[in-house]
Amino acid sequence: MLEPQPSPTRGELLVAIVNDRRDMAIAREKGWYRIPVSSAHKWLKDRWPPRWIAFYQTKEFASERYTVRYYARVLAIQKQNRRQLFPNEPQGKKTNRLYYKLLLDSLQTRPEPIVSLRWRRIVFIPTTWEKFITAVEINDLYDGSPLENRLWAEFKRHRITADRQWWVSVKDQNYFLDFAIKCANGKIDVETDGDTWHANPQQADADNLRDNALKVAGWTVLRFNSKRIREEASTYCLSTVSEKINKLGGLDDGGWVPRKIDPDATAYQPSLFD
Image (cartoon, rainbow, N blue to C red):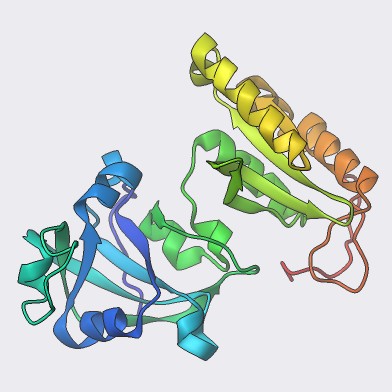
């Protein structure tokens, strides 16, 4: 049973990837899970340490693949090298690698799994307990900026199937898109630009290089600033995204035919959100 929690804290629950049956068995039977210290510093930063951990299972888990079903309370965290974690393992390049060893309470199971609507690459998803207990699909877990959350709520309300923090590699550069939308005749990257961050000239230059690389790779890039999202998310932002989706042949969201978007409509064709 999912228990109530105190007021939300960013990063209080960490969704981590499990792509090895041994790691899941260790979590279930021995009560611990490991995260490389370097990965925690790179990806989690101010969202560390978690009070809870949940597991995103990959293709190795057959009928449970691409879902989040199991979670546990984090009781304590220790720092150990690989030799300490796996004393019987032959020594190699990873022997002295440092890990955070998360000591876990018994694994619990969600009443319904959180599903991924598409195969996708996931590293970590630091989120809140509230998002975890209310999430239906993976994109609901992301605890982004207020701008991202506002636009995501608008997309869901109008059943625009988008993927949050979508990983793309272009010319040896890796990018995480705020929202990736797959259309019949193209792909859209929707970015939420915080005024302080993107007013920085250096960041603006980096964004320009990034946008050009994505455009060459076949992406249409749409950017909305704070004012637009705060005041016109349901009008200007939604209208712009909808128009571009329709120009690209409609949403490719797994239906028999691409789905056009009418931002003013009150009824919609069935989609993956149904």
